[in-house]
Image (tube, rainbow, N blue to C red; front, side, top):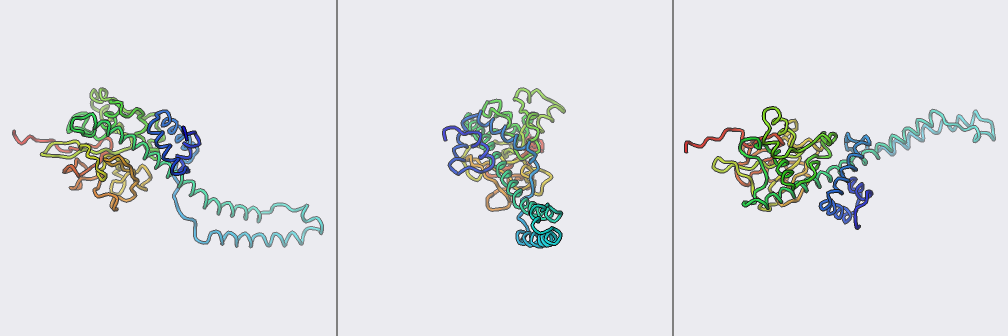
Length: 335
C-alpha cells in the first residue's frame, strides 16, 4: 500500500483492515499531517451520519432465532388456510395480496435482524473511536518526548507550582507553542462531548496564556488541555518536579481526562467503558478497569488518595486541564 486511500482510512476508522494494513495506515498517519487532517474529516462525517450516540452493546436474547421462526410459522399458517377457502380455484396466485399477518411476520423478522445487526455496527464504531483516540494520544506522546529531548534534564512538559502555567492543561500550549504538535484537534477525543464542537476548540499560545488574568485566564485553563489528562509531576523536598524521560513501560504520562462525575474519577470520554492510557515508553493501551493488573498505580490519585502531585518519582497522577498539582501554598521553612 503506497499511500492510504479514503477507503483505507474508513476501514481504519471502522477497524475493518487487516493487521498489516492497519499498521501501515498508522505509520502513514504519524508521518503525514495532511493524512491526519483527512482522517479527522472522515471521523466527523461518520459522526454526522446520526450515530454519535453510542448504543449499548449487548448480546441478543437467548433463543431469539427459534422464537422468531416459531412465530413466523404460527402466523403464516392461518393466512394460507383462509386464502384457500375464500379464493376461487385457479385464481389463488393471481389474487394473492399482503395481509396484516404478512406485515406482522415481516416486522418480526426485521426486528430480529436489527437486534443482531445494529449492536455489531455500534460496537465497530466504538472500536473505531478508541483506535482514533489512541492514534491521537500517540501523537501527543511523540510531542512530549520531543519536548523532553530539548530539555537539559530530559523532563516532560508539565505544570508549574504557581502562576498562569500551574495547571495540568498547560501541556497543550507548551507543545503547540514549540510546534511539536501542529494540529490542536489531536487533543480532542472523538468519543467525547467536545468532539461535536471541534471547530470551536483552540489551544492558546504561551504568550496569550501568560497575559491572561481573572475570568479570561480561568476560561483558558478550563479547556486548553482538551479531552486528555496530563501528568502533574511529583514533589521532592516540598518542591514540584516534572518527571524525566526514563522510558518506563509502567509510568503513565497522559490518558483520557478523569471525571469527577464518574466512580473512581475514571474518564467519561468513552461512556465509562474505559480509557486510553499513554505510558512513558510511548505505547498506548485501552484500560477497562483501573483496579486490574494492567495498572500498578492509580493514575488519578496519588498514594495519599489526593488529586495532587505524586509523592515520589514513581507516583504518577493525572489531572484534567484546570487541575492544579499544588493545592496548598508552599512555605520556605524560614530559610
